[in-house]
Structures are given as structure tokens and as C-alpha cells.
Image 1 (spheres, rainbow, N blue to C red):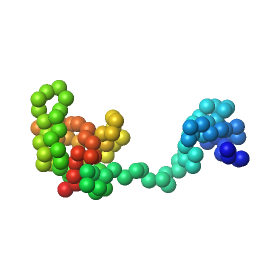
Image 2 (image 1 turned 90 degrees about the vertical axis):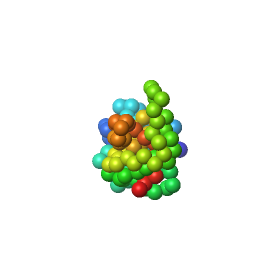
Image 3 (image 1 turned 45 degrees about the horizontal axis):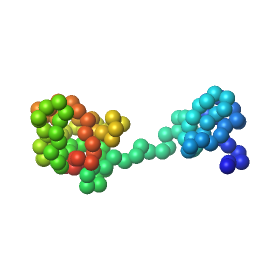
Image 4 (image 1 turned 120 degrees about the vertical axis):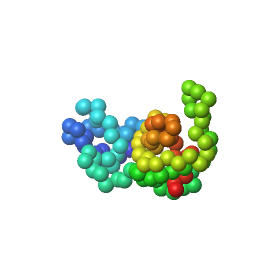
Length: 117
């Protein structure tokens, strides 16, 4: 147990406690990760890597490394399909690439099924 818990970043209350990896303020019920301060951008976003370990960035071009069946039909994106100008996002589930695939339209992909060109 921490002898000097950090003050709440929202209301400056000294009455905080740790619960499941979070700090919680007993006065305003604000929750935060210890070490994170509002406006502190010193921690970098986690790197998103492709299927072979290359670091991806916004605007990269990638190729699909396995056939991807699409929901709602019998169509699929074939291996080797190039996807240009990707955008990294915090998407649904583990879909972390927002893109537009020629012939299929806008969609989200998992970084584990693409390789950087």
C-alpha cells in the first residue's frame, strides 16, 4: 500500500486509493492510471506493428498477407492486395488500421494481417 497516495488530478483531494491498477478519488470518483497526469503527453502511443514486426505509421502502404472473407457476402480480399494511405486508429476490438480498399470501400483491418511495403 502506498504511504503517500497521489492527489486527485480533477479535484485536488488527498483522499485517493488504489483499486485494480487504478487510482480512485473518494471525493469525486475520478479514476486514473498512476503516473498519468492530464496534459502530460510524455508517454508515446504504443507502436503498431505489422505481421512481420515492421512499425506502421499513418500514410503507409501495406499488402494483405492472407485471404480475408468479408461479412455479409461471399466476397473476399485476396492475398497481395495493396492498401494505400492507411490511418492508425483505436478501432473496434483489435482492428487498428482504418483504410479504403479498392473495389471494397472503407473498412478497418487488423495489423496482424498486413505487411508494410
